[in-house]
Amino acid sequence: MTALPPSEERSLVRHSTAAIALCLFVFAGGAGWAATMSISSAAIAHGLVAVEHRVKKIQHALGGNVSEVLVTEGAIVNQGDVLIRLDGATVRANLAVVSNTVAQLTIRQARARAQLVGSTNFLSPSGLGVIAEADAINAFQEVEQSIFRNKLSSLNGMKSQLRSRDEQLREQLNALDVRRDASEKQVAILQSELTSAEALLKKGLGLTQRASALAKDLADVRGTYGETLSRRAEALAKQAEVGLQLLQLDEDYRSSAAQELAQIMKELTEAQDKRIAIVDQLDRLDIRAPVSGKVHQLNIHARNEVVEEGVTLMLLVPLDEKLIVDAKVEASLVDKLSVGQDARLRFPAFDQRVSPEVLGSVLNIAPDSVVDERTGQNVYPVQISLSARELDGLPLHPGMPAEVFFSGKSRTVMSYLIKPLTDQMQHVFRYEH
Image (cartoon, rainbow, N blue to C red; front, side):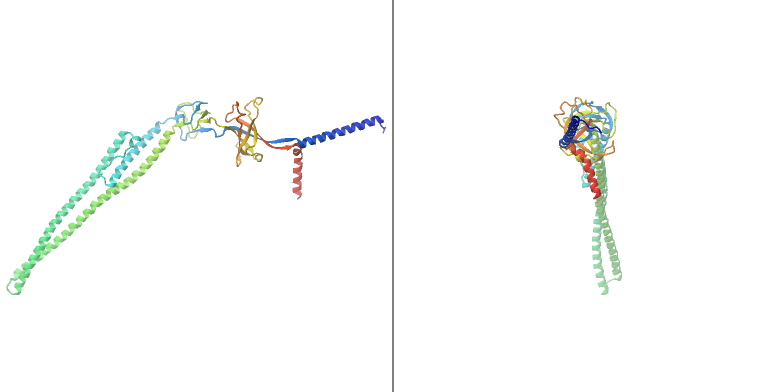
C-alpha cells in the first residue's frame, strides 16, 4: 500500500477529528434537547354543542288535532306563553257530561243523607253552579225532591196504617177490659149467691135446683172471663207486633238510605276523579312554554294537523343559558381527565382560518361508561364548559359538532423514546420473576 504524503495524512486526521467532533456535538445536542424538551400529551374526543340545562322538548302526553299554531320558527317566547292550541270540542263535551253527573250525584247524596237522619226535607248543596248549568241543576233538584217526597210519603202511609191498627187494638183492649171487669163482678156476685144457696141447702132450707142453676151460671161467667183474658192477651201481642213493625219501618227506611248513600258516594268519587282528569286534559289543550326561549325545529305549522302522543313538536332553546359541549371520551383515555382540566375546542362548522381554538375546562365526567350507539364502543360522557369571553361573536348553536383536545401531563422527548424500552424490560423482569 502506498503511503500518503505527510501533508495529506495530517489533513485526513484533521477532517476525521472534525467529523467525529461534529457527530459527538450533534448527538450530545440531540440528547440534551430530548432530555429537556417537554411535549404535552393530549386526548381527543368529539362532541356536540348543547345548552347547560338542556334544550326543552315540547311534547303532548295525549295528542290531538291542532286548532291554532301561535309561534313560528325562531320566535322568542316567554315562559307560560301558548305555543300551540289543540281542538277541545270533544274534551269540553265530555267535561259537560261528567260535570252534570257530578252535580246530579251530589244532589242525590244530599237527599240520601236527609233520609238517613230522618229529616222531613232536604236542601241541595250550594256551589254547584260552578260545574254545571243552572237548568240542569234545577232539573236534578226537582227529580230528587220528588223522590224524597215519594219515599217519605210511602213511609208515612205505612206508618199511618200501622198506627190505625194500633188504635183499633187499643179500643179493642179497652172493650175487653170493660168486659173483664164485668165478668169479675159477675163471678163475685154468683159466687156469693152460690155460697148462700149451698149454706141454706145444708140446713135443708134451700132448693137444689137453685144451687145447681147458680153453679151453672158461675161456670159460664168464668168461661167468659177466661175467654176475655185470652182475647186481651192476643190483642196485647198484636199491639206489640204493630209497635215492632213501626220501628222496623224506620230501620228499613234508614238502612235503604245508607246503602244507597254508600253507592252514591262511590259513584260520586269516580265521577269527581274523572272530572279532574278531564279538566287537566282541557288545561293541556294549550301547550305552553315551560321556560323563556327560542323556538327551534318547529314540526307543526298548520291548523288541523294531527299531534301524536309523545312526539316532539318543537325544541325550545332557553334564553341566556350557558353553552357547553357534550363529548364522548374513549374508556381507555378517561383516566387522563379530571374536573377542571383545560381543554381546547375546534368547531368544524366554521372556517378554521378565521375561527381560532376556544379554550374550555372539564365541567363533569360521568361516573360510569355508556355504549356509543354509533360505534358500539364504551365511552364516558364528559361535559366541557366554554369561556364566555372567547365565545364573544362566535355564533354557536346547540347541535353543532365540536372537536375537543384535552391537555395531558408534559413529558420530555427522551421519556417518549425510552418508555417502550423500559416497559419491555419491566415485562421481561416480571416474566422471569
